[in-house]
Length: 319
Image (tube, rainbow, N blue to C red; front, side, top):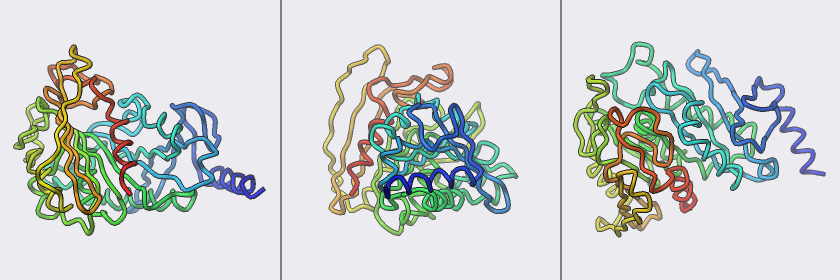
């Protein structure tokens, strides 16, 4: 009886809150991995929006983790779900968590690289916007605030870093893909507590250099960044980790893709591990996802593992 009453109330909240279902019916949940609900929120006087994927209704009767998946520069919330072939949605349906796909203003996150911001993004507080989404979800659903995670690729990866730097009190961990941190923003990164960090970077990324330096997109510089190794070393120090990792080479099960993978696991006394997936030969791509542009422009997509699965498995290890 209590469960039925809770579900009815949840459905009523959805109906009166202005949500719109995409790729499916306007029901609270759906078994369709493509099912997304669009929500709007007023932030800094601007109407912002985001998409969510909800797990089957049985999971919604208990506290649910949340993964915030941030699109890259020039991307969209909808496009991000397609990039990973809806795998996060499938995992959400399987294990019972909410996936959030926010939209940036003019498709660009304010990730701390202020020198390259478009005029319309100069004063945008995207950290606050994403935190406000979590608070709105908390008001509607039974959200487990000890299991809030962030991930993203490229601009979304740099934004994930900023969330871990600015709101370590809210985000239990993050997974950064094809990104690190800008040299401009690095001095401002001061996490208030330790967080779990997973990094997935390709050594042959033609846009975001694995060894640091200037990001270059279509011959335009997009800010100078730390190398992947320096970025990892920052989190090792922050999390009080053993600097000597255990290393594992994944089996080269897909030799045709031109990549191999080395996993470095740093054990930390605090229970906040730091893990690096070094994709040898990998490009500016989401492993296991779509090859969204030609290989000459962005490099190759590794098929040796599925990034969504690795990321969710990592988040599940965080206590």
